[in-house]
Image (cartoon, rainbow, N blue to C red; front, side, top):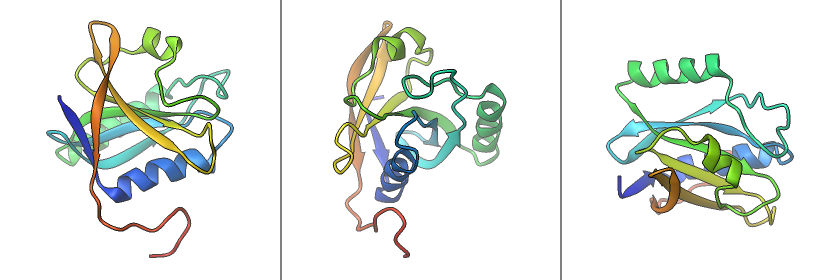
Length: 146
């Protein structure tokens, strides 16, 4: 994988989910085909310290994977938010990363009015930057009616 593609709608949905829960790390999976994401699958964070870490509910994670499979998708990525820190993998993120070959997206709300989304890929146990391509179609912001 050399890049990950998101529609403007999915990119906005990702940011809106993080902003809806600004004090905890939201998390989930990205499904699609080849390098193009077509669906976001939010998964409940069951970490005992959700303000600083995420742990996906295993049952809901399996449910999301089954939904992807039924839709002919594969898991292209994993996402989570950083409510107060940069869009960079933390040491904990690196220690618990278990899926080489998929994109890891981090949404930073360190500056709440200017969320940042960054993508990475796990290579030999370390994260490397991954190109994130967002289509340029106009999309309304969080909570706006279409």
